[in-house]
Amino acid sequence: MTNTELVRFREILRAKQAELASSRRGLDGIAIERSADQLEEAEYKSARELAVANLRRESMLRHGVAMGLLRIQDGTFGTCVHCGDDISRRRLEAVPWTSFCIRCQEAADLGEESVLESINQPFLDAA
Image (cartoon, rainbow, N blue to C red):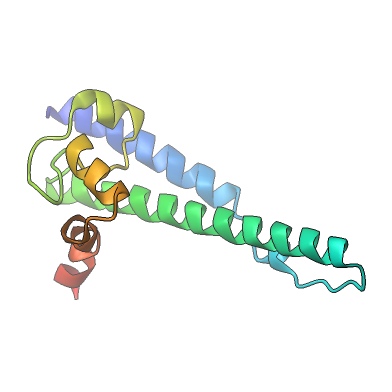
């Protein structure tokens, strides 16, 4: 990957990081509300679960963006963290914070443990 491409991806990732920072959601949507009505209680529970899922998704996206910036810094951006193959340019254009090639991402989506373990490896190496 050329320096120009790396600079462009760094700018994209920094812009995404700034976007995520400005749209920070808090724990407000997870307030535990009680009601005597069972239907309302179910609605409250559903809303809480949705808020928790959104927070989890946003947290994972923040993590992915931060790791993408670290991979640019250490020279491993564009390389799959699991198998070491190059990540296709089309995939990086679509999801610049990805850490997996499409094959390993599919394996991770199916829950393959060896792929999932490689997600946390950069944190272990830093410790």
